[in-house]
Amino acid sequence: MILLITLNSHAAEVDTVSIYSTAMQKAYKCVVIKPAVGQEENKLVPALYLLHGHGGWYANWLLQVPELKDYADRYRLLIVCPDGGYNSWYLDSPVDSTVRFETYISEVVPDYIDNHYPTIPNRQARAITGLSMGGHGGLFLGFRHADKFGACGSMSGGVDLQPFTRNWQLIDKLGDTVNHRSNWKNYSVINLVETKPANSLAIIIDCGTEDFFYTVNHTLHEKMVALKIPHDYIERPGKHDWAYWRNAIQYQLLFFSNYFKK
Image (cartoon, rainbow, N blue to C red; front, side, top):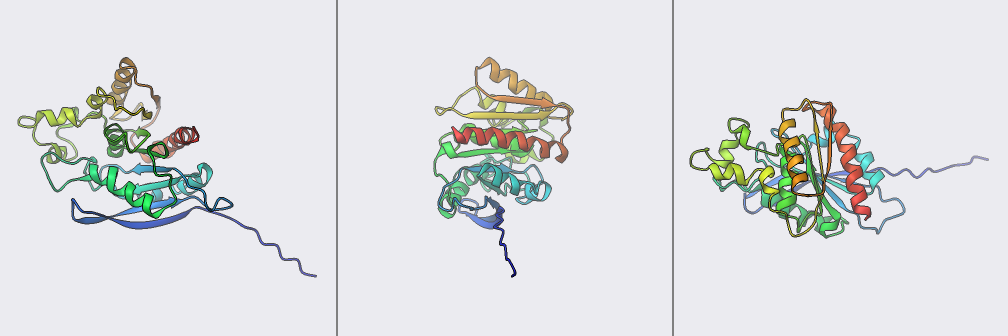
């Protein structure tokens, strides 16, 4: 007698979709990591929006951290990695009307995801974070769109743009510091936190002590403490590199998973 045993193995699935921006008149690709269905076929899941850094693209996170598929299964959440352009800084640029990535990431992409995937369509089931430029984006969009996201974070984020006027083509997005000085202040997270959103946010900030963004992150943390803004803050030895972010994303996923469980 031959005994056949079938093992049901479930693993996260990965989609690559194109999401059109009416404002920018262009479609951008997006990676969507779906947790395995298993026995919870009809259950809706929360979504984490994970942003790439300057010079990156939508596939960065999955290529560098393929374990994201395992994490999606472990924490039972959808991981969404949208394209934020080469150097958009996730802004609706006040000086370049062709750059509308704030609107795209905070409105267009979540609306598409909620209409095409089994997500829980409310802010308590959405979180946003990212690395470097995406760390700025995570906090910037989290604070400015707390009606859309209930939790936000940053890994090695450029949380204060003012010391970096000569870097990363920022001047193309914010204008020069003579005629457009206020843009550099108003579009920096470190000043944005002074106006707390009406909705409470769960916030996590993570940066390595050897990172060139360490000083601005530590200063942001101290300012948020003074303003009595609840947040988790982590600093540990580390540089501005994927070795650090592969580690950091695990802390952030645990943080967001605990938030979603509440």
